Every structure is written in structure tokens, then in C-alpha cells.
Image (tube, rainbow over all chains, first blue to last red; front, side, top):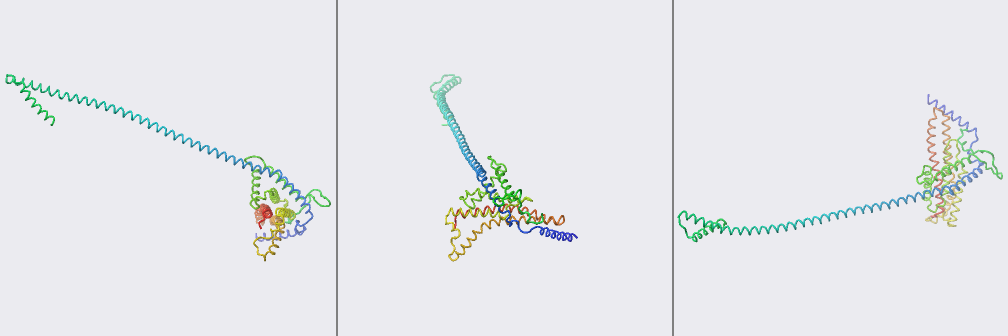
Length: 196
Length: 243
């Protein structure tokens, strides 16, 4: 059914177009020379004017604009480069300053530490010297004391032993013989004591 | 009026008949669309000449077309072709705008007339030939003698070269004219089918018509580009004699 309608439409339309075409004069209007001269005239006029106005007024302006933009961009890039270089330089300077300061601080710290250490060392040395002196002195004193004590002990021993003998026996004994005996004994004792 | 697909190419007088020395130069619909195209180009590109570092849309359009054509010329014809930039720019824009205005329904396509395209092509042909003879003198005739061709074939090659050189204006003009005419005729035919097949059968030709419109816009741009680039190539032959 639908097919039939479509075919009918097609046939009708073809008939209509043929009749319409045959009603008008056929051929290409392009080949009708009636308005050729007019077309050439107006083409030359409009295209000529277009060319003159474009080339004299409009295109130079556009090219000028493009060039200024280009130069401006180049200039901007140049200044940006310069500023970047400057920044890099500044950063380097900053790094250098920080480095220098660090080194200085380290040096200062080291020298101060050395100074303090030296000071401590000196003090310790002098103290040690003093101590040694004191020790020597003390030893000397001790030695002296040892010697004197030996004599005193012997003396006391002789006296006590003579006293003891007097009370035991009731008579005096020759002091010199007694002292010889005590000295002999005490020497032996001392040797034993000193481990000699 | 609508049924004949060739009717759209009719030229008719607008206003009074103007005659100078018995020559009819009346203002016609063709003249009207030439004037409209030229004015549109001038208005758009004049708006595009604002002096601002960051361009607006129209300025961007103008500057992009400028660099597009500038690049096209330097690519095909080298740096020697710089003085002819304005001419090729005007030519490209004129053909492009005439083609594009022809895409508006019920308008007239200036470039669908052989006489218009032929005048343009003949002007280019004559101009290029004159430039060639000015630049190279009689040495320009070497264009017809390609190097590295055996002596036996030379007479034949020279004849072929001369014929191809002389047929340049014809091929240039007929290419543009035939493309424009064929496209518009086809669109008109399909448009006629839509009307005559009505609501039932008209959808298929309507779809074709829509697709053809897109294709024709592409062709309108492409033919303007081809016209300009062929001009550049001919100019290149005249400026840099390679043979």
C-alpha cells in the first residue's frame, strides 16, 4: 500500500518537474552573453576597490598589529629571562652567605672549644703539679715521722722495759745493754713488719 | 519559479538600465552580491584591525586569516612572492565570500558564472606571464623546456608544456565555475524532490539536501583555497624559474 503511494508520488513529481522545466527556456544562463559586460565591469570595480582598500588600509594595520604583538612577546620573554637569571644569582648569593655563615660559626665554635679545652688542660696541669708537690711534702713528712717515731718507740720501749725489769727484779739494770736488746728486737720486728 | 534548477543562475537587472557608449553595465543581482561580499570583507577585516595585545574574536579571525594566507604564499611561492600578498589575500577572500554568500538560500552565487571566474583567471594568467617576462626576460620561455628530457622527445614536450600553460586560465576558471554550478544545481534538484515528493517521500532527498549543504560549504572553502593556491603556484613558476 505504502509502496504504491510512493510510486504514485514519484511518477507525479517527475511529470510535474518535466512540465515545469519545459515551461521555461532551457540552457545555462551562464552562457547568455547579455550581462557579461556588466558582470565584468562590476567585478573589476568591486574587486579593484576591495584590493585597493585592503592593501592600502587594512592589511598594513593587521601586519603591524601582528608584528607589535610578536615584538612585545619577545620583549616580555627577554625580561622574564633576565629576571630569572637575576633570581638565580640572588639565590646563589643567598646560598653562599648561608654557607659562609655556617663555616664561620663552626670555626668560631671550634676555636672557642679549643680555648676552653686548653684552659681546662692548663688548670688541670697546674693542679696536678700542686697536688704532686703536696704529695711529696706529705711523703717527706711521713718519712720524717717514721724516723722520729722509731726512735721514740725505742726510747719508750727501753724505759718501759727498764721499769718493768726494776719492778720485777727490784734493781736497776745497765741501761745500755737493755737498749741494745730492745733495738735488736724492734729491728727484727720492723723487718718482719716491712717485709724486708 | 523554483522547478528549474538552472533558474537560480539567472542574472537580472536591479534598478534602471545603465548604458555607456551603447554598452550595458546595468546593476544586476550579480553586481549586488559582488558589492555585498566586498563590503562584508571590508567590514569584518576593518573590525579586525583594533590595536590590542590580546585580540577579540573578530580580530583573531582577521589575524588568523592573515597568517594563514601569508603561510600559504611563503610555502608555495617563497619569500619573493611577498609583494603579491595583498592581491592573493583579496582574491582568496573575494572568492571565499562570494562562494559563502551563495550558500544562503535564495541568494546568488557570483562565482557560478564562467565569465566572472574567467576574468579573474585571465587576469591572473596575464599578470603572471608579465611578471615572468619582467623577471627573467626571454629566459622565461625556458619554462617550456624542462631539463633532463631526451632531445627526441623535446619537440613533443615543448608543445605539451605550451598547451598546458595556455590552458591554465581555462582550467582555473572552469574548476571554480563548474564546482559552484554543479553543487548549487544538485541542491536545487534535491530541494525540488523534497517539494514534489511531499511529506511521505520527501525525507530522503531532504536528508541528502542537508548533507549536500554541509558538503557545499566545504567545497566553497576548498575551491577558494584551490583558486588561491593555484595562483601561488603559477606565481612561483614566474618568480623562481626552476626548469
